[in-house]
Length: 317
Image (cartoon, rainbow, N blue to C red; front, side):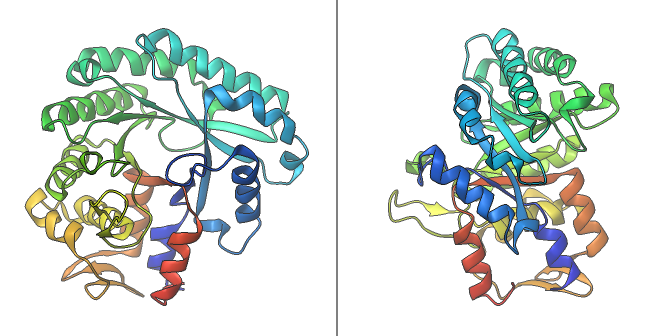
């Protein structure tokens, strides 16, 4: 495998088997994740996404957690009227879960949806992120953002811009990337799928603010395709992350990103010894790795098999 593709896919996919459209029960979802971690493609796998309310159910799987390395979890925070109180309590629950399993299970990432009111109020979001950072001490772990705030991509650009600025300000104050944005790219209704134009502008706003992001929902396949369930066009994860990498490395505009997001096939996307490119725009392998680490961090997918099957069909794996 060429190094540029390896850098592009490294740890890209957080496993969200509990969520639509898969909606697996906890047992098969967690055992799927255990199997994926032990497989040859484990290097593409990120964390297991689980709602904070279900952490207690994981205690029954202590024997599974004995398998090294530690199981890594991203905790979905509660939707709450008062996240200033609820979210720190959720972090406390996650720390108790880690303590229960003696370091064999690590809850080092958190994801929460912010209300439109908080998204529109930069000072409120900065305060919320500051409150969370007080609870996410060094043991919360590792490099990269520790909390991702989901913003609505379908409700206009002002909320995205203010959220990106709040995340950037909090990271600057902390001196490290403690927070990021979360972009929902699909769902169970056509309205849940942001347009390529909205997604392009969101990527540019996040890039301009130096705000990292993760994505979720609808990114089952490398390239756009019609979703028969909703009638909407699904975004492709190669398009989304390819656009993000080129936005980061080449400072492309939203107008320049849109055709990359809309490209329905693989012909213009190339990974080779020199790096990644789309139709003349390129990023070398160190730039791909840097953009993945600093900007386009991961995406949640309810299937780890579909993306890999598609990549193999393309001859990329």
